[in-house]
Image 1 (tube, rainbow, N blue to C red):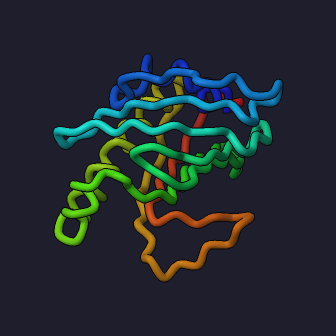
Image 2: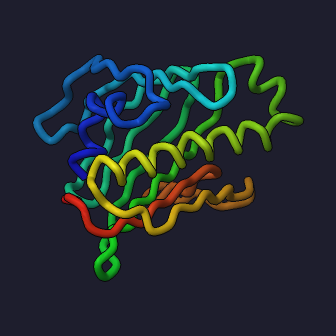
Image 3: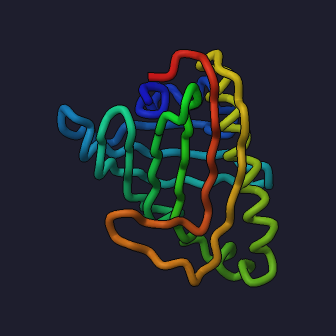
Length: 169
């Protein structure tokens, strides 16, 4: 949880993140903090967006609203299953970049594979950082008909990782 919450440190261990800048500090519990992320992707483009923390429930939940080149909601959840920690990242966003929106009807599968590669790199890097064994990682693309419940937003892009051992808090 602490590794995920400490976004300023992400560029050190997640190779797809070029930079994280804290724009606003937020409350003592972290809610209201705004960070600007610059992601390098597997394709030859970068994405920059701000993420404002809207929920912080240690050690199981972090959620934020994205704005900028991506708009929507991101949610990290962590749960114990026996001796495993299941980390799920739900990402319900849309791009605001005109060329991506223009290409989306034909390039969506390519963009989805690109997102999957970035998230796979993040899952492997997080496990390595925590000296944990990555047991399983999967990427699920939900279809547009999936309903979104305000308290539990469902993403059309999501990634999950299961880790065993390590320093998971």
